[in-house]
Image (cartoon, rainbow, N blue to C red; front, side, top):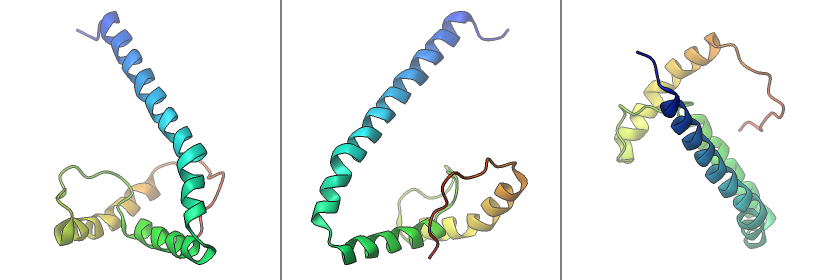
Length: 106
C-alpha cells in the first residue's frame, strides 16, 4: 500500500516549514550577521578567514557520512580524509548542474 493523501499533505507541510525556517535563517545571516562580521574584521582578517575556510572545505567530505565518528577530533578528521576519494569518484559519476559561480581555490 502506498502513501495516503494525509501522509503526503503532512510531508509537504513539513518540507514547507523547514524551507521557511531555513530561508528565514539565511536571510538573517546575509542581512544582519554577515555585515556585523565584516565590521569586526579588517581586510587581512577577512582574507585569512576566507583562506582558512577554503582549506577546510577542501579537506571536508562533500556529503554527510552518518556512520563516521561525530565526536570531532582525530577520528572524525581521519574518517573525513578517507571518504574524500570515494566522494570524488561518486561526484564524477553524477550528472552535475553547471555552476553559476565558481569559488576560489587555495
